[in-house]
Amino acid sequence: MTQAALREFLAATRTIAVLGAHTNHNKAAFYVPDYLYRHGYRILPVNPVFAGQTLWGQPFRSTLSEILEPVDIVEVFRRSEALLSHLEDILSLRPKLVWLQSGIRDDAFAEKLEDLGIRVIQDRCLMVVHRQLLGA
Image (cartoon, rainbow, N blue to C red; front, side):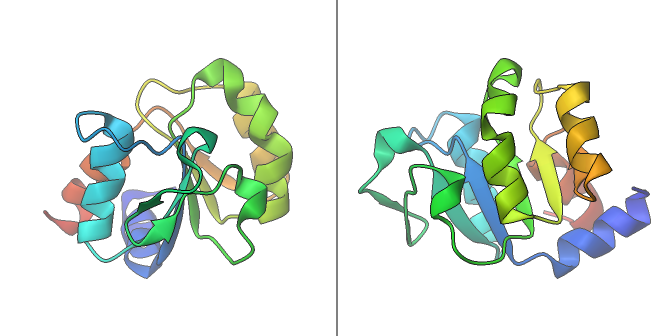
């Protein structure tokens, strides 16, 4: 995806599911989606550890399969080796893009998604890219 296309996509994006969202303000899995929330995105936190709690005005879901509405981006804060365990849920959700945060990469996982028409960005911070393309 070109920078111009990514800028346009992020400007049109409304809903982001955050797989591995966290309540600890010092973790990237909190402050990256919190930045996005403060910039007008609807953030749907997903983490079974925090089920029953609310963050960014939304209840934590235990799994992606609990989300019953369209999602533009699935932002992933999970170790690379855990990605395949989420493949089925991601495919049923059919996001337009799966964003693997900094340090997260699995080429085989990405290829499976891309073969089915879901774009993937690996090993990049969504907050940094958003700042670069759309300003802080």
